[in-house]
Image (cartoon, rainbow over all chains, first blue to last red; front, top):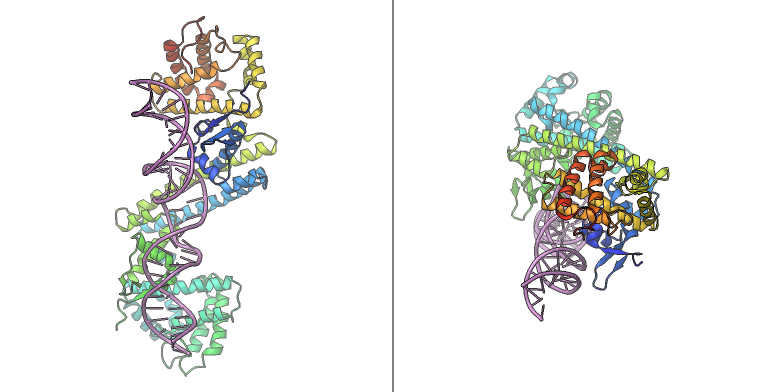
Length: 268
Length: 268
DNA sequence: GTACGGGTTGACGCTGCGTCAACGTCAAGA
DNA sequence: TCTTGACGTTGACGCAGCGTCAACCCGTAC
């Protein structure tokens, strides 16, 4: 009987396997599954073996594997079980990610529906002076706090936002540097210190902004506070990050900030 | 002071918000966030309000919302809480999907590592005659079973695969028709019935394949069996689906299959 | 003058096909 | 034989959200 080694046109195979001819042509294009025969007119024909291969491909696809991973399995470069195992791990991570995202979304919904501002919640609000009123008054006097606070309240929300963002950006860069394994004395960290001091200097009412203020003492005092107070340390990724900031600031102060009484060093 | 209504170049804003200038230009392109000002040289500048908007956008993005959804929120066409609520539902569905997929992957890993064939597992194996040996012998005689079985074993695995796939494809189409809410007497269902009979007819050794066999009785008997036996019904999506198949076959037989003794009706 | 750090506008790349578009083939009916 | 219609072919765009060149202009500093 001539029924041996029969093959069928693309549409038939697609229907048999429950997919589309477009998919088959795609698999041909990417080299995943070639037709068992191609007619002189360019028509693709597939035999039983090709169908079997196609079904394996479709099965793996349904399980979520990507075409490159499937191709690896087919070229015997990877064991099916290994590939599936890796994929399973992948799926687990995705689930975790989704779970975290769902938690964040839920939290944001609660925040928003109780009238809160999600942006402020999310951002390191280290710039909100009222949060540290007592500390500021105790260390640098009531006048410092009052002037700084007045300046802050004198701005509109949008302008305040810029300042907050600036702190946030600085914080991000500090964390990146601290976790990046570089040295507090490195050029990158020292540039961060420069930005940090420039930021402090630009806030009216603080000792650093006064031309005759003790910038050095102010900076070093703050640096210690970052490490000592977990509320500050949180802005730099925890105590370890805060320690990195403190060390960088100390080095910077030693090189660029003279002792009390002679204004600031080189700050942008 | 002229510090009011300040704005900043694209790079600065990108850093403040912790993103890239490319992203800002993309948001401009898609109309999600326009610069507050554009210089005569084409440079983009953003003010504090724009920064605030950007931060809200980035926050929503981090939560997984798509840019179109975010744009809706910003055009006040959708409440933030509503959008987030919808998104939360979405995330839940994704998690379920992942969970199902993980279960499938795990099962497949077990199947493969114990030497099983995942493709065969997945496919409706309704064509494996040996599975129903007793029923076949009891209803249509030992000879019918033996001839059919010999024919089946005479094929190679690839050819068998084609037959299995054909049954699977037929099953898929039956299920689609049954759940699609169409009538068993409709043209679509009747065409399925025609295919079904053609399939039965093409299996050597059965009453339907004999020129003088009782095709009508064979088909109607099978139709009843599909409904009565849950192992058969499973091939058609359960008893409800099997009932649909039975009804369609009855109608088809009434119109196209003459009584015992006069061969088959019109079958391809 | 020139070098350098940014700005601009395209346009491709990635994933896996769905979906036209424009055009050959083939079997069947008038 | 011509027509029709179903099916085949090869491009090529589209989608999500930017990353990543590429080619070219701007502004400031040395």
